[in-house]
Length: 103
Image 1 (cartoon, rainbow, N blue to C red):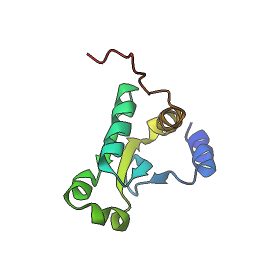
Image 2: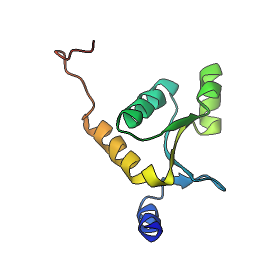
Image 3: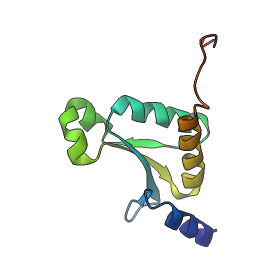
């Protein structure tokens, strides 16, 4: 399974490993609310996602470009699933229409 993940990661160079940890950066956002929204979509899909640097960005948005934005981290075993959620979000699969009951 590790070889399959290595091959998949080679095809997705935008996903970065955290050295010495079993975590990967699957997305970066300059706006903390966008990162929180994506984390919520991942959590709703069963992916244990964590935000890194969100509080720094909220304290001073001018730091966002210097620090690389808010990072979304997931364990190695959820990297491919997280990428699928990101792609689904971009397609609009998580969008609510005007008649959606949100209660």
